[in-house]
Image 1 (tube, rainbow, N blue to C red):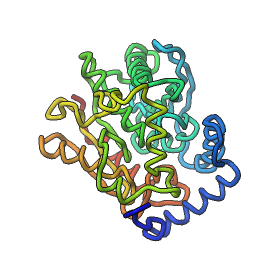
Image 2 (image 1 turned 60 degrees about the vertical axis):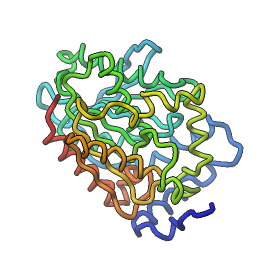
Image 3 (image 1 turned 90 degrees about the horizontal axis):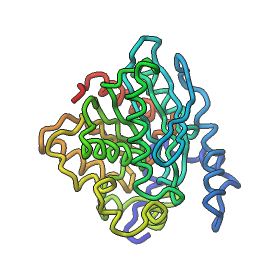
Image 4 (image 1 turned 90 degrees about the vertical axis):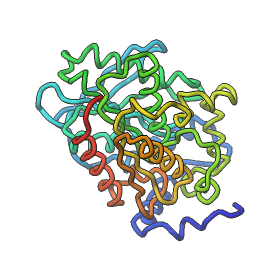
Length: 321
């Protein structure tokens, strides 16, 4: 903890209240030495309360996509009854090892309501069972499925966007890079990226922030990477180290949101600076007074809904490539 800021005493009042409520909901669910499976079950139980309420979509459907790695569940919330809706593919966070379409359901319902799009939440395979780059390939296969089934699903297969938080933001950009590598990246409108990880291996924000309050100590971060990667060289590969790719051109418009007291904040700042330097369309938002994962706390934290609304407005004005 040397040189770490006293973050719990620096966050805004609403974030403190959200943190207090999260601690109540987490009581008895997490314990030192517990298995990953126990951690996953605890995370699912703790997130149930946060996902209650919020806007209700026009319709919801659940289905399965057969990918090269097996079946992947997908949930679609339609924000409008109109035909041929634009598509937002949401890829959830959780360090590549936690989370599901249930833990991020309210976020996707809000986005569907605000954008009037069809929001598809992808239940990609978690690590360490699924090692890098399997989740990227699964998400790419979901994209291809949606394109192929666009008429049946009543969506516009030539108007696709990505959205994701934390590790899901990484997977969102990685999926786009995968599609671009295989010359399948046409018809992508935008990326809505919330406090993502993009390949920095050290930064000022990593040195100053992160602790038990947000589950992102240096040890936590190493644990998630050890789950995700088969070897150390994976961390430098283009489908994780997003910043190592050619971002000078041919990238979608990006809404890049960071949290003020997030150890991963400098990842978003670096991505935004690259976009700005090369003249690519983007909007960077640094949300004051909040922690990593703040996008979950819409029942208590006004900044959650404000940020999702900003992302929706960005999406509505962006243009497909």
